[in-house]
Amino acid sequence: MKVLIINGPNLNMLGKRDQSLYGHASLEEIQKSIQVKAESLSVDVVFFQSNSEGELIDFIQSYHSLVDGVIINPGALTHYSIALRDALEDAAVPVIEVHISNIYAREVWRHYSVIAPIAAGQISGLGTMGYLVGLDCLVSLIHEGSHK
Picture 1 (cartoon, rainbow, N blue to C red):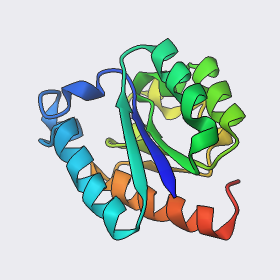
Picture 2: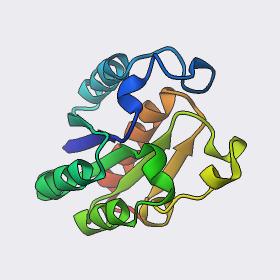
Picture 3: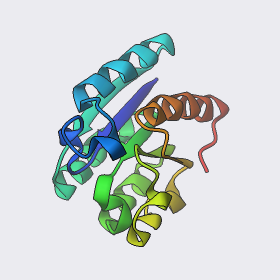
């Protein structure tokens, strides 16, 4: 089983950004914990982060036929990127949307996700643990053969 772990704009700054919202862990530290979890589940993971919407879309399109699912933290693209949403939908694999902070406890404009309607599920507000929970859930969905 192979899974993409995608992080959008500004997530390369984790550990340096507002730590009251995003915690102290860097993206590299988060990826290491995901890698350990993935190995325990016999899952290969491919990590990608970009601040560019087009690069994220190109990555998804390049890998979609080679993977079984996607975990994505789209960052601010969550709220308006129809192009990213369409790329994820066209990938035709289960998608779990992850947010470190609770987007529903923040500014009103953050409460809406264009990704959520095409995702199998959304995890918001569990900190970096959300990625690990998301991986558990995604693996279960893939084994069950369901994703919507």
